[in-house]
Length: 231
Image 1 (cartoon, rainbow, N blue to C red):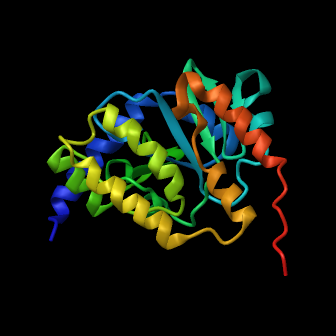
Image 2: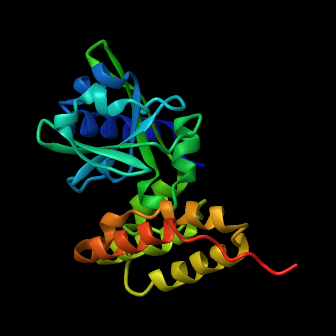
Image 3: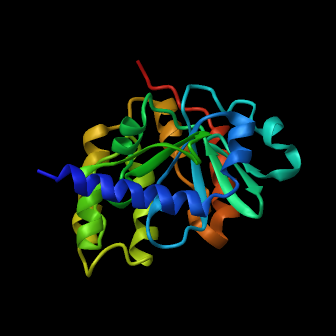
């Protein structure tokens, strides 16, 4: 059982860290209202970007007009990427009813941490910090692990990023590759639209220099019609 005081101390540290890293948070709040920030941006290593998630469904539907089209860098089905005060911010469309449910749905342990920003009260804009038990394990051991996913095909692509970043020790990632493949097989694909939905969850930025080729293939795939099966 985790000591409550220990959890409180970690929560305070996380709140101070993410608040210091996001001096521009008030601008986001002024544009869209209360929001979640979650994932690797709360961990010790300085983040490349900040993933922002909605507190209520369809909150970011008109985010482009609210933050200004001049600040928008990229728009995909899953997110609007923008530059705010020189920092990269991704407004993700992925919605869960609470911060706890959002973090539990993340596929790797080390990113299951987040905070809710709201109107500054008593000097702090952070009203809540949360993390999963798996995140604590990843923090204490210094390596991540796969915890299951609604989009295992995307997880299979993402794991390569974490291997390169040193989030795995030695060959421990092999176990997780097998677990992800098992999840893909167990989940199955219901139909053509389900398969496209799984592909849409893949972050094309992970393909680096090959991204343009992959994007072209994905766009071509979107226009392919499934061949009817014989009765």
